[in-house]
Length: 285
Image (tube, rainbow, N blue to C red; front, side, top):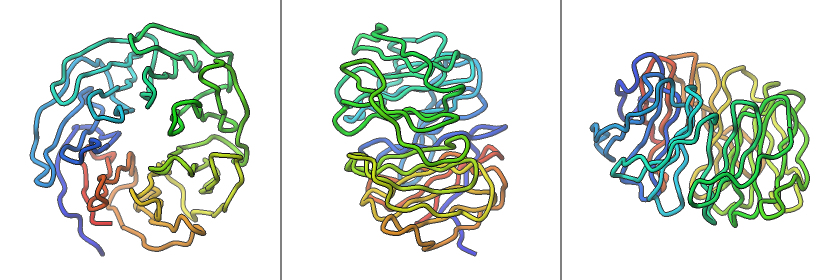
């Protein structure tokens, strides 16, 4: 069994997310202790915390230049922070998840399952019509022109300028558990609650493959920086699969059932996972 590079206590009851800063010098995690925590890379020594949320921190999103961090929480707020200083720039009430646009501004998922667009001053631009019964994740395309929103049905494609749905990517039988874009923005990986990983081209939406994961779990997903591999979390393991055809390349055994957020370091050296035991594990993928 492969051993992690390191394991450290991070968030008490449960660690939910693990994301590397764009420059690779810091790992940022969020968890059920209501804190955003920073860890120096490669030592993974603690490097401070952002405090303000009143419940579990479940989503984290960096701006492209690494100067901003948006955190979404079960307390019904999205908070925008300067990074790495941690100055709280704004609090968006009634929101639970956020993605920062590469073109400026951001998008959120509201407590009422609506996708909301905000400008660079964090003023609301538009609340979109109901896209799905529930929404779980969102991400911008590489040029910031479209927003992808996933929930209990398809992955919805929203035209940001037009502030309206412009299409969708279908395929999963039930809820879309997670989605991730490759670093170049060309590929979209999604996992479904039925236990399938699907890969498609963002432009045109052509599906490249669909594979069964063979085991249940949270099914978070992340691309390696070079776009060649896809990491997927399942119960007690992380699967590394080829982005060419979905073939299983490696299974990393993890000694807990709840394997949550996944994040590759920008240089591909490390893969971090947040766990239900409150710990963060660092692997060499």
